[in-house]
Length: 102
Image 1 (cartoon, one colour):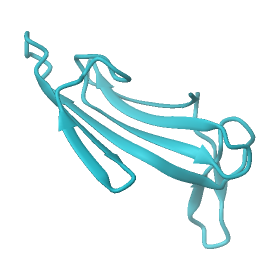
Image 2 (cartoon, helix red, strand yellow):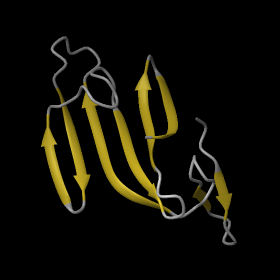
Image 3 (tube, helix red, strand yellow):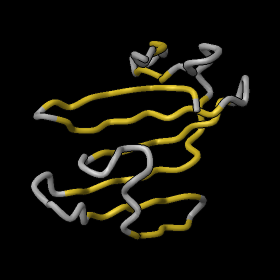
């Protein structure tokens, strides 16, 4: 889904919740996936930061798939309590953006 934004009085943009349209989204966690596109063994790095705890592993078969670089930011809405994720990833030379309810 295409992300929607609310223009604040200071002209900055606030991301809207994909469920209720509210703009009180709070970070839940952040994940970074780094995989060499030409790596036949799908060896890469996965970094996750969640509640002041950072972890590093090679678990690449989750949100992004095994052959993509990407960033996932998970949110929880302060208005409707739905969880969502904002994904940025690369595929075939394109940078893709998705914002979905989990």
